[in-house]
Length: 423
Image (cartoon, rainbow, N blue to C red):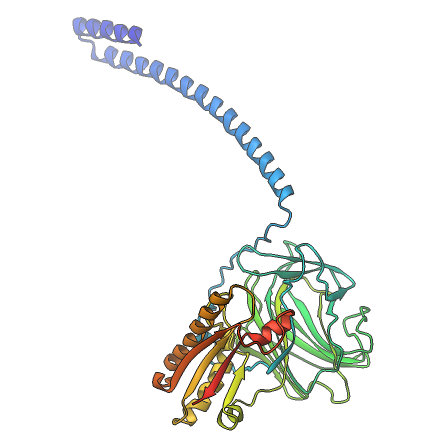
């Protein structure tokens, strides 16, 4: 640097003596070029060293991450957040036209809580493969259905009654990145053994629903031949987004809802001479590998009016809450709407709302949670349906008054309930 300064001073002196401005400009430019060249060389040398260090650090981090991944094989399944914003799923108002009311008594409930991560669920059978896992966005365990085949819960021992409801949560996913759909099938059918894995229309009669991102379709069959078909573009599936399916069977009639939107209502679909006794998920010719959970099969159409007005007590398991929360789930809307209708038509009736929980968790926490849930129900009836708060009292019993055993998933589901007592 000292040499450069001496050189500059020398040139300044020369230029002052000869007053040659053009020569001065050329000399100044030359000096600037020399300085820039030296500076660039120093920077390049430093960057080269930095690149070597970054590459080395990156390789070490990748190696460490690979070792961590091998050690954490039960890590949650990553799920992308959908960019689809058309359905604000946290608002019950989106279910305002939802007339679905779950069956009165739960006879099968599956949340895979009893299954180890990575295992095929103990109560199911298949000719394909699947495993229980968790996700990075949603609580609980999920059954990921894989490969082409059928997946059957082996829990039903009696033919289904005339009136029942089936609900489940699903996260649609592609079976490979370049798949064009995330579709899958759900079937209700009649079979003697339940182990018919030979095709897409099992047993001697049934109905299946194919759900997809381009719309849905249903097919009824009898003795190996299709009898009725139909399709709908209402509320298609959304990849990697939680959606709630509700199916309501009343004798021959089938209603199907997806996130509170009715996609099918077929009055003469199921045949009266068939003893339907199995449900199953199908991945025959489909491009989806869905995650499913919270499968709920309940029987008996609740007569809310007579139970509340005549018997003086209405028990409902159709008002659902988020886990360990007093936040009401959107699919509860149909049940709440029917209860509100009874109260609106009988303005002199007062009720006490009592919350109940299962036995999971601490007694004191469950008691407090049940009380909060009863208040949430009262507030919703007041704000959404204008039921005067002075007509309602609230209380909670926690886990202290079970209506069923707490050692099975369906027993726990029956214990999670809300009671309305006529005052």
